[in-house]
Length: 498
Image (cartoon, rainbow, N blue to C red; front, side, top):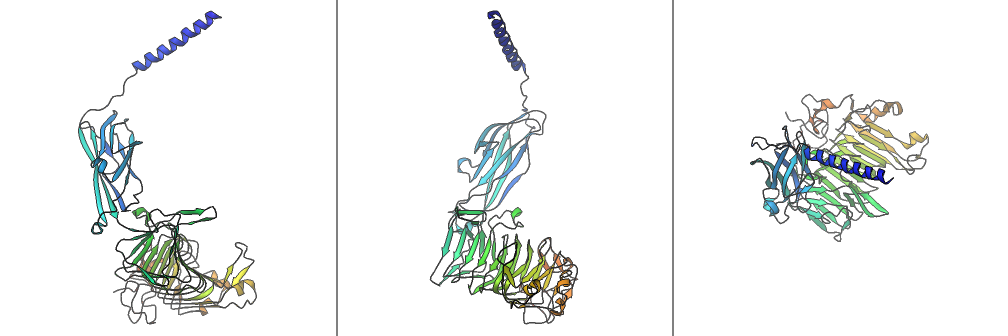
């Protein structure tokens, strides 16, 4: 037995010796040392779109490739400004600003991750300002560089930087607070306008940070919400040349066409004197929701690229002139439980969605999705010289509780279109008298031929658009861009300029 154990020990020693011998005999990795053998890169310039001061940026990256047959050793990768750099780099898990002896196998690559923070103390005259710096790669005694370029932007933070889970209240004893700073305003969490008129001056940019906000276990909401209380009001007063813009705080080009990045604007019950002039609202979940008996006036305003409905009225009072409601993933406009609505020279365009551009109802379900309990309300709706179109066969949907229930509820359903282009088909089966309430309207089967470029959200009228000269003079002297309307005005928010 002892002899067997001795044989086993000798065998184990022999195996270890052989393995060590083989490892020592293994061919070592061959690294190129020719000056001409240099890495290649996925970009020559790594660009950051506007970066708000203090908050920093998203992480961007590029790749470094070894296209050669031998392994490559990059002796040094460093930020040009070293420890004073506004950029931060991480190269294959190693933190910069100075990384030595980066090895890349033949045909392999390495990732370089970059972030940037802009100095908030930079003067306003430099905002937005460009931050540029090189990353230097030294290989076989030769230098190669990648340019880092970031646009910085000073900003006003509401309530404060990264205040995602906060609810801020703006109250001023029924006075007026103006947002007129040349620097943009960045809203986090939720802002409630209470006992105050919030007046947004022409040219002001408002960027809203979205995401899920968690105040407590019982209070979780979509971040980036603006609430206007009963005693508050919001006046977004842009001009044709200097509109007010509400959008996401993600300013990279890839996010500009993304909907649902912030929650939206909600005007609560009985709030008065809410005005949006020459304003753009985009990238939100909903554009604006107006609750019971609240008032909203829209003039030359665009609400587009929303994940939900662009404009919602819940037994509300809304007037809109020269407005565009487009690229909404649900309806462009929806009336719930009635209300009073007037739309003149507006364009409602919903392409690529399964919801009609306009939905009108004189009731609200209290127990969705069953809808066995409803709350009725009187509907008064007028739409003149407008275009209602999209990719569905029915871009107008009517839901009259009296028709649906088969009995009179007392809730009126008073709607009328005048000199409008509409797209309807199967809806006429339920409401065969629709065109009795659509005076001088034209039914059409396609909306794309009306506009310059639907994909680019350019709803100006095309040269051969049927909407040209289709309207009647109702006293609206110009269009959404401030261009004059003639004696035979065009339908929709744009007047074609010959």
